[in-house]
Image 1 (spheres, rainbow, N blue to C red):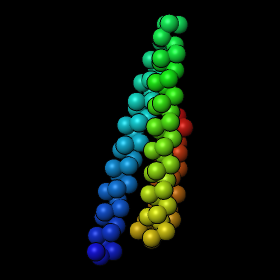
Image 2 (image 1 turned 90 degrees about the vertical axis):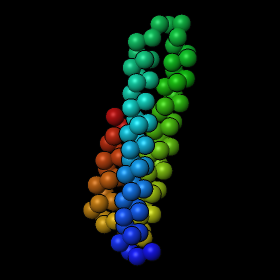
Image 3 (image 1 turned 120 degrees about the vertical axis):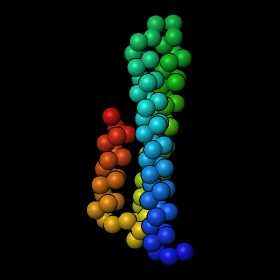
Length: 95
């Protein structure tokens, strides 16, 4: 596999993982809204769902960071690209 092909593969992988992180963030935000609007009787169930969503976002964020770090170490993405993508993922995961 050529360097250009490796770069193309890793960019697709990063996009896939970032899109999955975005999906997990969307689910977390929906669960957060449901929890805020729930009746006291539903509170425990909604809290459990919210906790699960936070865990999923955290796990996906860490996985994406691993993919980015590997891509950087293999010199498939630049230092600037690595820093930008890490910061973007961090900002999105924390909101």
